[in-house]
Image 1 (cartoon, rainbow, N blue to C red):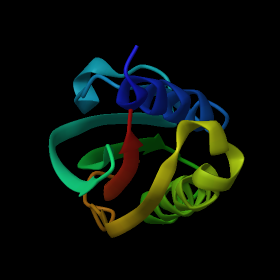
Image 2 (cartoon, rainbow, N blue to C red):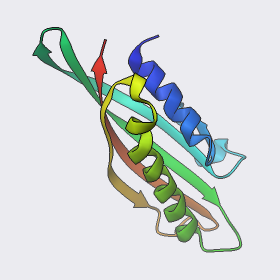
Image 3 (cartoon, rainbow, N blue to C red):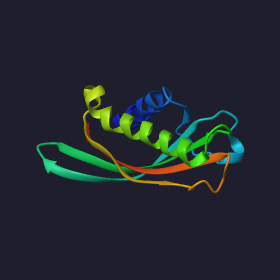
Image 4 (cartoon, rainbow, N blue to C red):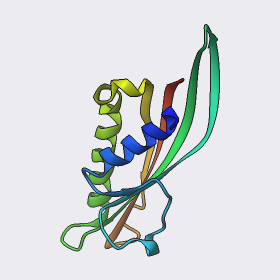
Length: 132
């Protein structure tokens, strides 16, 4: 398996600690279990530094879904976003063998409660790793 595949698999495992997760993008009508995280990596760019050192950078589009009738949907979506961001921030240190150079959240948006009682959070995550 490629390092990118290993990183995505581990990311899905880490997200599974806070929600059901899938690395196949799904829409709200396909989901029965909440909270739910679905994400897909996009195309990758490569930087070559010489001496066989290459970094791959990819953008991961992530969507989190919540369903909560006891609180407002926007709060539930923001809480899920914060939990996702904590996992992303800790990922590099938690998995040093994956040679992640940097992983960070670039943007977070929510549906602002429009889909109540459902909450939707969209995150863009940039992943840079050492290619083997």
